[in-house]
Image (tube, rainbow, N blue to C red):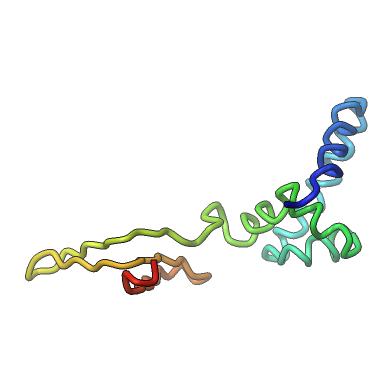
Length: 124
């Protein structure tokens, strides 16, 4: 389990800031996050190190705070997981419905292709 004490401390600090300081911090964050969007949504490390200028020691704390989710959404859109799981898929075919069992994984690729990966039931 990760130590989330720094994240809790940061939230307590935020709550005590005067309104004007919170606004300045929010505007600075928004500008930096938008910079990442303008370049096409860089990786978690790119945003953390290159845009915000943090050192590697910030990696885990930012991850605990949920920043990786933010950068994933910026890079991939709201479908951040890119995966949907099912144990059975039915395909409507002119000859009737065909069923496949196992672990079915739908993967949305970067070029908006929907790829179906099928794994045998024993891999569940």
